Length: 221
Image 1 (cartoon, rainbow, N blue to C red):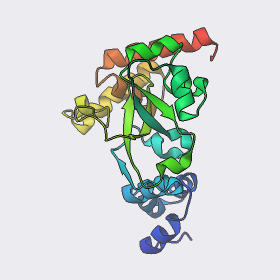
Image 2 (image 1 turned 180 degrees about the vertical axis):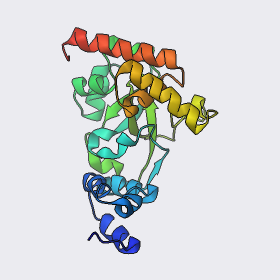
Image 3 (image 1 turned 90 degrees about the vertical axis):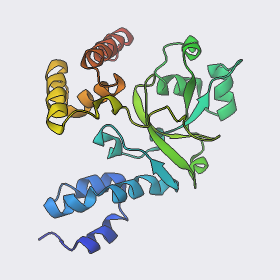
């Protein structure tokens, strides 16, 4: 019989890795209700990196499935004279890692953006910091972003779902179900594309189709 004392479960679950916490949530209803508590999930997600605070909520629950260093990035505001190569040298990372994280086909992609996400090369930089969960429209991924100077702009949303906030729960579910069937993907993927399209289902389908074409061109399919 599974242990059912909630206080005891919290003490045990607090020591688990984020992957083991996800497994624990599948044992029974009581374990699931404890293992999916927001404060516990956030604490276990940030614990290995000693992050002081994590701001925002992810669009998709799949964000919490792992907390590898690749889930974090530095926000670098583009300025005159910046290049992918110079930023790689500055932050001690590989050029290809910057391009891969930012979904860039070439170095010229830097000129159409206000910022680049920089991979974390030294995990110690995350200690005692505040990170912001953001859905980057260019990188097309959710990342916990570290700002070395200040924080995100006020007008920059931490989540990509602002346009859906006026929909009822049933309305949002119907919209996601419709996209899921059209794309032939799971709920998380449909929700992700809806988020980067700022709630516009047509734009979500266009983004999805563009990604499929890109995968075919690059031989990823």
